[in-house]
Amino acid sequence: MPALVVSSGPVVSPPSSHGFDPENEIVELPILLPEWQVTALELAAQQRGMTVGQLVRRLFADLFPPAPRGD
Image (spheres, rainbow, N blue to C red):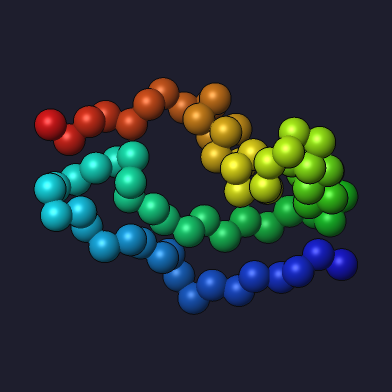
């Protein structure tokens, strides 16, 4: 069985000293997946020489447009 990570809520990095920067604002996103999907995700990441986190971030980057700049 894969490791279970428990979070009491979102984890947000401290605001940057130069204002809002959507590229650097980090929020932890707990997700529930069937075990077979976790296994497939780990395998897909390993085959690409990536961590699961890197692969998920790439999937999100491919799905959504770049974040607006806070300029």
